[in-house]
Length: 176
Image 1: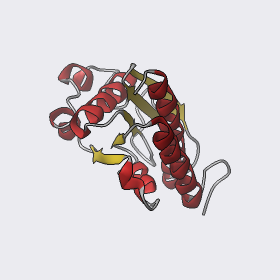
Image 2: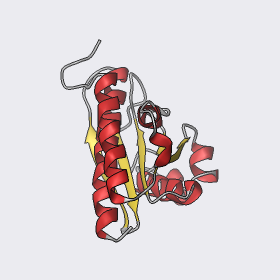
Image 3: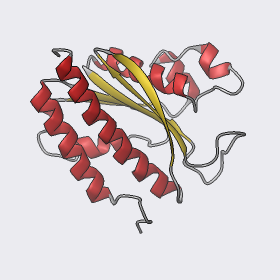
Image 4: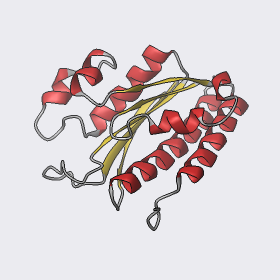
């Protein structure tokens, strides 16, 4: 059941089709690194027939060692009190790592607390950081999504797909 403001899965797939169209129009390839969404961003993208022409792949980095060993998130970020896996620094490094290991032009990352447990001081349930890496650099954005776990995750997927679309526009401005 979809909560107020949380998109349906079908809505996420429509958002994915829009991101894929933006990638094609910009001549770029896409990738993702996901933690709290557990592969749902990649799942939405690959639910669209023909996505393999621009979608390179995704890394589900649910565990801290995968963030570090596969994506290259630094121990300093992961071990720093008050920073850790749910942070802008981690999201940025995850997106950069996805871009590197997948060989894509534009990558998005998602890391956060989908709930129902897991809240930390200053990081309530629904806190999600996303990173975007393009040929122009990388950045992170913080979101706070309301709702139950499935609603937080679907909201995060929709936001990540919107960020991918932004990244396609940025990459096209960079000539890539």
